[in-house]
Length: 434
Image (tube, rainbow, N blue to C red; front, side, top):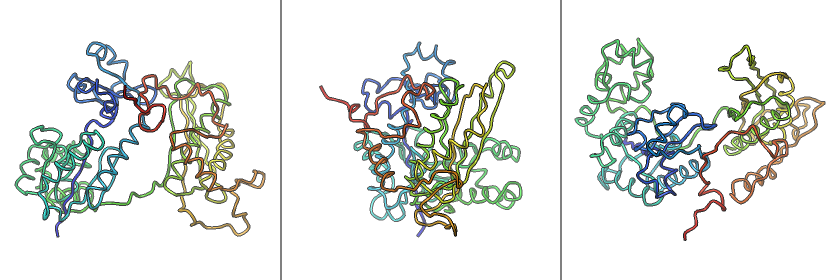
């Protein structure tokens, strides 16, 4: 049986999340800013119509924002993650198999669904159910391959007359749409490759689909040959219904103000260790390797504000998921790379060398409960029960528990002056009806 895929993508996701609990913003332009309220990273349909560009620094559009009454928000990652979870959970109830591709989009396996209901009707049902259950608007693209489903979804967003659903299972409709789509819209074709394809006379998705796969493989790689097969309706990319674990976890942020004191940098690095350790436990992994990195701003005047960047990596004796083990190692690594006299703009940590829980290569003479760096280091034993309890409390929305190493007053923390309430994850922020 030939495969059938759907790509479900939330419309203007971050901006739509901000509007969800603000009915007064239904038809108003909304933008969301990046970390430290730096650049525009999301725009509502109305903001796009005003000409607000993606990625533009906020200060460059401040006049435009004020003139047209654009409502501006800082990034509310807790809200976006929770709304995403609700959307994906709903999709898992509607489709036989789901691959969560990103925070706002997922592939569905619809193979065989057409024997019970038309695919277009099923797509409309998905849209309506998501809207009714979560309040989010989505578009649905349906096709015999994931690459074509991506194109179908793009068409569903671009042309309102589609009703937000495009069924591209017909060969005739596939070719008609591909003739209208620039090759840059094909999944996996970036800007550099687009220029090279244009140089070969390939400007549309249809021209790419009709190109010689062998010629393209010689010019590029087997990846683009597979893309051509997908554009011709041959499914080469299977649905990954179980998300693969990350091979490394990075936690990093630019500071809202420069850090010049070692104690403040210790707090910042400890904060990032907390976040990375929590992510590690969420995918049920353990890690042995930790890297700490710090740097000043590469954009400053380096005569008045000298540039410095450095990192250090340490390896634990045994893999762990205990935050305390990583805190101890991070402090030792930071002491090695810290230099007084610099104004630091960013820091972060990276966990690597992952192991699944209960699967590890033991050291012949090592204490299996210890994750010490060396004999002089204090013994830290992974306490699964303690870490589980901390995560449960912190995810409850009722309270927060953390190690004192990250500090109480974080003046260096990411600036989010326009942050909306955590409507769905904090009891005190739950909207109250009058």
